[in-house]
Length: 570
Ligand code: GLC
Ligand code: CA
Image 1 (cartoon, rainbow, N blue to C red):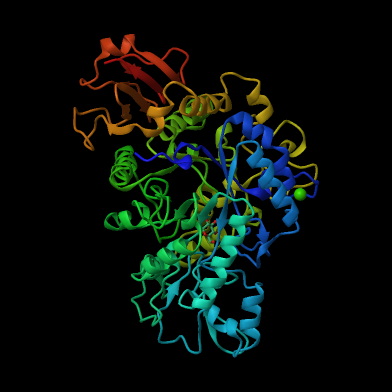
Image 2: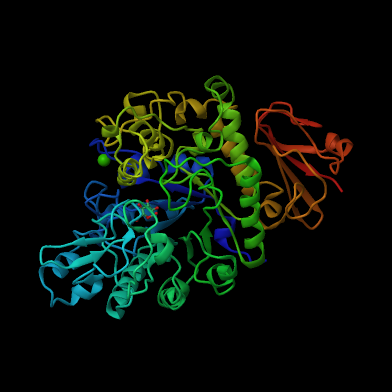
């Protein structure tokens, strides 16, 4: 197994507008991230993924870029960005940025020029058509048609909001401009990128008519514009012209890459170092359908998806494991959705630690999303006016259009809104949890008043202390080598190695390297579960417990939401 710095890294994802507001205007900023470097260092993480802070009208919170070379003034300046990169690097923390190149903002000068002048060279940087009536009628990812008309009567294509026109990747000059920009950032000291919505860049430019799949007469854009053949050459070219030239890391947002294509994506000479898998994080929704459409899922299915990804990636490359990100609700609410309020209060911390354990020790690089290390939960919205997220608003409209009641539509937003993850980070008990002295751009979480860095730093039993311990175990313990480079074998339950039938509630896997074997056990339910027969209980009783979310680690019966990691002796 080839050693790589990014395989050994623990990533921490920062949503800059919600992390820390240093200059007191209610919105987080780069200076704020800089001031919190000591916290990040103490936590033990070794790399940051910072969400977009480029110039942007913030229609989609920065995923609509109007200038790739500048920092949005609300976040700071390009000097701040350089200083932040320097400060992080000096503290042993690498930084990767979000690369949003499937689309720009409609305020980008390229698009402005393209709209103002049909003859402009920028017209072909985007996808314009004079008449779209006989072309594919697709539903954009945030709802409504992918075609929007401009003043001169022509139409442009957008996979996401209408303020996010798609770039025309067939245009060589445009591609070159993007590569120049990427290389410029690499020279500023970034260690790589997270590639946003990258599997959308290729389209069938003839946009053939398609069957509608909803009452709006449109068809899901994902069905026709995701992983379109021909994308391979473009991804290879980009790699060759930019980050392929150095020891950089790339992690791609690439839902739906089929198994047979994985080698091309993350194999030895793949387009990227890693890709994010969505099969387990989107387990509670129907891909491409309204959030409001009910979906039942089982622990079994979740287990199947999680380990399927591990198995597939094991053959080809390296996984990017994550519980949460800026597009997902908080993991406790998602994975333990049916749990009664009382039980939730009782077990929330235990649940957070169990989920953390399950994910953190999988084979691959762990990504922690800000606030996850505190065990933050979803907030609650009382009206649609309180919801900021462009996707949530689109989803609400769509649900109504599809015949769901207002209550159902709103319930879905409360369950799934991306705003849950975007509430301010909670530092202390001061006003706005110490995030800002001014009214924050987005309301603070109304549910988690105790989950703050200050409180949890002083509490050895806190979720934060547990995360610190997990990070130390993975990176700075005698077992680090096995946690990072060891093989993963799923011990039981119908997947990788069928050793014995096992309680559905239990997740069991081992990480092995040479003569070392670590066993990870996690109970996903509030019921006690018995260990399967293949586990030698007598040996377990002798085994050393490396970490556990109960004071006394597990023996033969695994308690509600219990998680434990053993070092097994052969
Ligand atoms: C990705 C981002 C998301 C954004 C979208 C459009 O899915 O993670 O936040 O809205 O792309 O750029
Ligand atoms: Ca600020």
